[in-house]
Length: 179
Image (cartoon, rainbow, N blue to C red):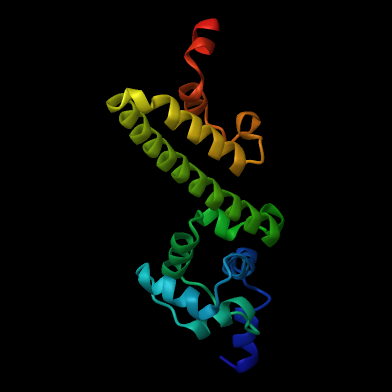
């Protein structure tokens, strides 16, 4: 096959999803802030070895390098996407800014959930302490209420950060019976 024939076979007559894969690989890599080296390392760790120059040729080569099935499955694994998503037309996927923001939101949400669990654990320890030392119950609750009010600029009882379990525990006994 002549060089011109090889170029044509790997170029204009290629199936459209191959171009979509190349665009998606580049977008997913950039959204994560990964270099082509980092992506190659992640692919190798996932059991689908590929070198950095092959990643670059897939994304930007003229003509682009073809992606084999093993590599496609590796990209799906490291990017946590389906094969359908990998081959989808660019208009069917969110732009890099939206994907980055959604990714950041999910990471922050996971941290928020973990912090909530940690706060619940500390609250359980405080509750156990006040049950073991009932004479200090009012002092512990007053101190915690004061410190939370200071830390939240006085918005502790009106803010989403004031967890309902904590508010109910800090509520004076006469408020519990009044409701």
